[in-house]
Amino acid sequence: MFFRKKVVMAVSAALGLGIMIPAANAGGVTYKDGDKYMKLGGRIQLQYHYADPDKGQSTDELLFRRLRPYIEGSLHPDWKGKFQWDMGKAKGYNEVAIKDAYMEYSGFNNMKIKLGNYVFPFSREFVTSSKYQQFVERTFVGDRNYGTPDRNLGIHASGHNASDRLTWGVSIASASIDPSNSKLDFDSPVNKDKDFNEGWMIGGRIDFHPFGKLKFSQGDFKQEQKATIGLAAFTWNNDGDVQNNKLPPPDTKDTDVDAVTGFEVSGAYRNKGFSTDLEYNRFDSELKDNTVTSGLYKNGETTLENWMVKGGYMVIPGKLELVLGYSSQDADNYAEAWTRFSGGVNWFVHKHDVKYQLTYRQNSDKNGVKGDDETEIFAQAQYVF
Image (cartoon, rainbow, N blue to C red; front, side):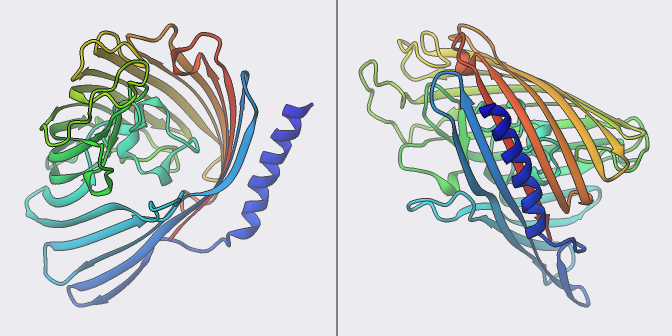
């Protein structure tokens, strides 16, 4: 009875949020003067989250998951700049987080170069913007707390062949890791804390689209056949600039990370309202201290494997979508693989620009601990302009 009551509350919250956000045309506002332009836009994601662990008290909260305005502009042909910041989940001194912040040159044939803070080209689910996700929260493969790189500061190149059936991206960047034995938590160096491990990362991806380019977006609005398969990899090494003091057991949560390599294979298919996404990621991580057995790590190292499959169907084309998914995470020091079953419904007022989402997620053996289960409900209203 208590659980059903919470479900009703979550649904009511989702519908209530709908009243608060008007159904208007979205896409940003652009001011132009010849070749010069300035564009203003952003996204608002108001979220309700309920968590009910089998061992412990249930919790819930209402928050701005993301509150991200941006400014983009150009004064010269082939050049543009953009910066975006996030005021969602602000607390303490962490009031504003820098997201995209880069200058771009697009004067090359079929290629763009960005210099600054930008999305690293790894994990199809992470590269897909949060505003284009079918579930309220990303699965393991797109979660930067578990191996997937964040936006990073460096040089980012991307391009495609003449037919647009082959796309690619390469980055050389500075990347930070928030040391924690229970996570492999990549962060952007522009929003770092003093204990973050610093290092250099190089990596890239390539995607093949046999029926024409499939953009980094989830769901099938166009009702036409599209498919893609992607491969990606990266390597990160600690540059030694930040070395936290070695802590004696059991307080070893801040053990420094020495090196990480990552590999991805992913795919997606769209046709007649159906959508399917699949992804597998593998990360090999080593700590500076090879005696640590804690969290993800056994004897100072781990192989962290994440995978997911999700499928959606537009019950009412372009308006109402049902989604199901299953994902798993395993690590060397886990007693059991951590698995998640997810189900959701998405109501699109103006595609992804104005939408309302309800996601149910059942966690089994959370953090690799046998029998540690948790039920979660997410309700989110999104407005993109």
